[in-house]
Amino acid sequence: KNYLNLNYTFVGPSGNIGRAWVEASKTLGIKLTQVCPKGFEIDTSCKTFNISYSIDEAIVNSDIVLTDSVSESKEITFN
Image 1: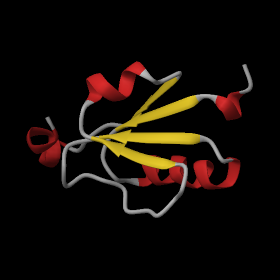
Image 2: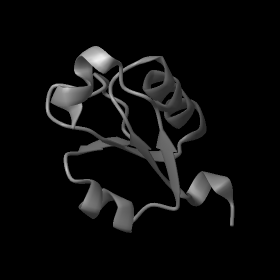
Image 3: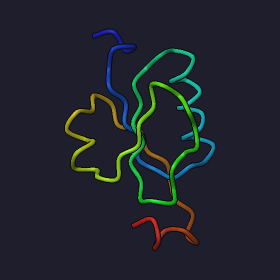
């Protein structure tokens, strides 16, 4: 498969790792979905970027799953 045609899912909060994947999405045109609770979204207007609040729904269409850690101070809220 061509990696540009795959569906990427990022599970994690807005932060440097997630924003780097958004930049990759913009540059390469890859389809990226972020999965997170409300309030943890990456703020972007990227056309190839979507947000999902349901990991069960998002993971079904994913070819590649990307993750990032959550700081202890936000861990309870994120879960």
